[in-house]
Structure formats: C-alpha cells, structure tokens
Amino acid sequence: MTAITDIPDAPRTARRPQLGNPVLHWLRKNLFSSIPNGIITVLLMVLLAKGIFSFVQWGIANAVWLTPTNDSSACRAARGLGACWAIVPEKYRFILFGTYPFDEQWRPALSVVLFIALYYLSTRRALWRRELVYLWIGALALISVLMWGGVLGLSFVSQDRWGGLPVTLILATFGLAVGFPLGILVALGRRSKLPAIRSLSVLYVELIRGVPLVSLLFMASVMFPLFMPAGFNIDKLLRAQIAIILFAGAYLAEVIRGGLQAVPRGQYEAADALGLSYWRKHRLIILPQAIRHVIPPLVNTFIAFFKDTSLVLIIGIFDLLTTAKTAIIDPAWQQFSVEVYIFVAAIYFVFCFAMSRYSRSLEAPTTPK
Image 1 (tube, helix red, strand yellow):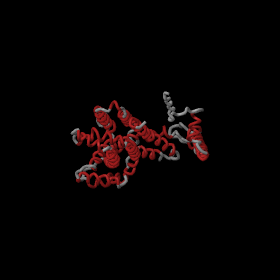
Image 2 (cartoon, rainbow, N blue to C red; image 1 turned 30 degrees about the vertical axis):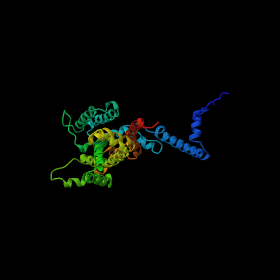
Image 3 (cartoon, rainbow, N blue to C red; image 1 turned 90 degrees about the vertical axis):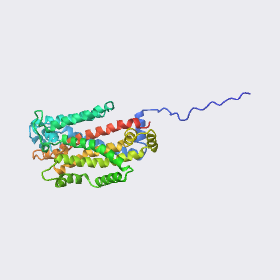
C-alpha cells in the first residue's frame, strides 16, 4: 500500500487582502485605533482647523497687498484685521540687499542666482567630477568681481555696504565649504597615533566647542585686531568668516569622527592588505563609508550653521535677518514687523528644506528595504 504524502499547507505568512476603503483603514489604524487616540485626534483637528481658518482670514482674505509708495494708511486701517503684505514689495530690496547702491543691486541679485545654480549643479551626481571644482572656483571668482567691482567697468563697493541675502549665503557657503575639509582633517587627527597631532586636535575641538559662537565672533571683531601690527587690519566680514569656519570645523570634526568609528575594523585591514597608503585608504575606502553613516547629523549641522549666520548682527554685519530688522525702523511701517519676519522665515525655510530633502535623496540608496 503506497503512502500518501501530505499536501503542504499554504504559507501562513501570506497577507490577507484588505477589504474596504484603504483610506478608512489607514485612519482607523493610525488616528482612531482606540478611544483616547480618537479623542486626541478630534481635538487636534479642531485646533488645526481653527488655526488655518484664522490665518487664512488674517493673511489672505483681509490682507492688504499693495499700497501707494511709502503710504501705509491702508495697512493701519486694517490693523488687527488683516496682514500688511504691502511692506514686502515696499522694503524687499533693502531686506535682500541691505545698503548696497540702489542702481547696482543687480550685481548681488546675480550673485544670489549664481549661488543657487552652484548648489543645484552640486546635487547632480553625474557632475561629481573634477570639472565641478573648477566650476565652483570660477563662479566664486565671478561672484567676488560682482560684489566688489572695481574691474570690468564696475564701480567699487566696499564690504561695509554689503548686506542681506548675499552676505548670509557667503558666510554659510564659505563657512561650510572650508569647515568641512577642516573637520575631516581634525577628525583624522584625533584618531592619529602621533601624540602631538592627537593632542592638538583634541585641544582645538574642546576649546572651540567649549565657547558659544557669539564669543568667537566677538573675539574676531574686537580682540583679534589688537594682536595685529599697527596699520594692519583685516576686513570685518573676513574676520567673521574665519570665526564661523573654525566653529564649523570643530563641530563637523566630531560628527565625522563618529562616522569613522562606525566603519568596521575589517575595512581598515582590507585596505592595509591592498597596500594602500594612509591618504588613499581614507580617501577611497574609509571616508566615503564614514560620511555615508553620518549624513543625517551632517545635514542637521549644515542647517544649524546656515541659521547661525544671523549671529553676525552683534559685530555690525548686515545679514538677511539684520536687514529685515532694520527695514522696519521706518515709523510708517514699524507696526508690521510680523509680516517681514514671516517673509524672512520663508526664505530660510526654502534653503533649509532643500538641504533636508537632498539629504534624504543621499540616504535613499543605503536605506534597507
């Protein structure tokens, strides 16, 4: 008598098809999974709806969008009922470009466009070649010519007249572009087997991270010129830029050091087995993996430093936030500071959100499915 083999059961891991509306299923699972969750969801939805309705009524329905030149009477009549967005077209050139000569403001505007174009091109992986470095050098040289002038028929404009968005982008771009390789060198120095290099790296990181950025800016603006020879003076914007670079380098060094520690020891041993030199080993094998491990904290640091450029206010540099504060000194528009701050916050948000989204695209290939 032949044995009858059992028919294997269907795999129990197969998912049952969801019945009903998938939207209702998601709402029931995430927002109304229990009675307390349902109550909290309803309360939050009521508060959110009330906030959106109030903002739409204040910022759109009852808002004043345009007024005659330097006439804020219509805004004062709507005070408390609607926003006065007319202050933005009235003051936007001062907010964006500060006291830069009015007839020459196309130059900082073109510089901002060049910065944004460089940021965009740098996000394209197909362009990650040596030519991109040359493009950055050429574009930064062109931005310097546009901002300073004095050549090619452009009138000279001293850095005391610079302000607004170009100053913010200059401080953030150079601060992070120079601070990032500095942070890599310091992170490698902290892991060096040479006691002198390791001690100097630790001293630099602990000294810079132990004081706030405000104190570094103050030292760079007030104390640093006292140590210079008589008659020798460095521009105030350059001194602030050096302070930001040193501050960024110390913080980025600790982030990168965490990434270096996350690389498995076997990667170091494999690189040594291939006979690679110290610098080739780190450039080709170790650093790419280390930086990939710490993309989220790196981007978080970039965003924080982009916003921290507003601290240069304490040494008299007119960045974007400072020009916004100065724009509302005019008595005719002094009551409408909220609208100006919302406008500036939107600019900061666009740049920070773009950095955040780009970091997510960098993480995507390494995210486990």
